[in-house]
Length: 423
Picture 1 (cartoon, rainbow, N blue to C red):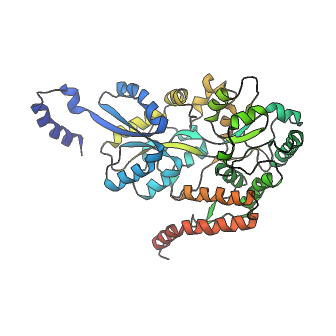
Picture 2: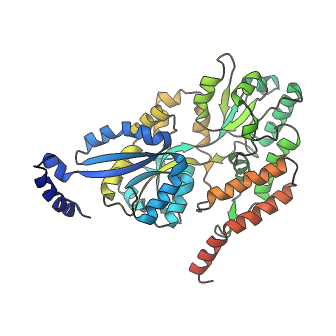
Picture 3: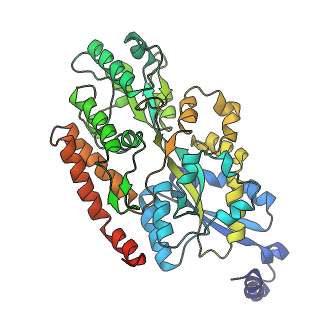
């Protein structure tokens, strides 16, 4: 619907209402924004400044719980009732792109003074490039780093955190020797997928092959990372337990029963409030096979739906939320990390010693495969990783099962791609 059509439809209604709303009401455009979880609540605090700068645009924010968001988005796409702008978890972008629901933002970025691709961490930017087209703009980033006890690490002969797998394993062995049988140098919950996926991808391995048609888990690169992950359990350096089997990780960390965990940026606030001030803790980027290692490019992005009648106004909102100043403000409100380098120059982030590891790690992050089935695939990784960690399967058996299960998940994708290719 064009702006002229909207005004034509609204004028009779204004006459009935006695002209309530004035001239501004006749020209006003409302952009509907769907935000998920806490971010959906906080973004409303940024809206007044946007509306002040853009008098003809109002923003209507709807907060949606993460637990209901995926189904609601798919229902909206099928029913033709999508919002103008939405926050999408990065693993959802390929799915909505496959449904042809998202606008290609590449042409808009080319003409934008506010969105500078060179200022974004490359791995985060790449999460939104699906089949060569830009489907979203990173809004905040999430990745995984080490949280550790520097006093326990130093006592084991490592005053600085290790940067290679060899040094990391040595440090864990030394800490284990000092800690005893019932205490562990690292916690790797067996029901969490980011740890085995990140370690498998650190070698440069791809999770999928043949253009995203089949699993690639028996690739020598992924095997190397998976074997390293499983070996930490086999050597007794990590307990083969799920997250629910650890009553209170912060308490166990504080008591020295755990010395390291691999986790995300929200834990800065949790460790700050739940670890006693006399207990030292620090963060470090992940070690890698032969030097500083890669981690995962996670987080959320801003997308514009193709069904939007106000795509130009929606883009203005995306540009506004992408400004370094707004990203810094968003960080102050939520703790979510900015996907651009410029906000990290602010003292608020630059002087945060616990955030420094994330800043370094964000230069070395890799996106998950840009396929709609990505979440199903990575969940299979932890399932097979848990079998291997608990001694229920060998590494070879686990990886073979992974390839079989992922090939089944991708069966429909293969059929579609092969049909498009005329095979």
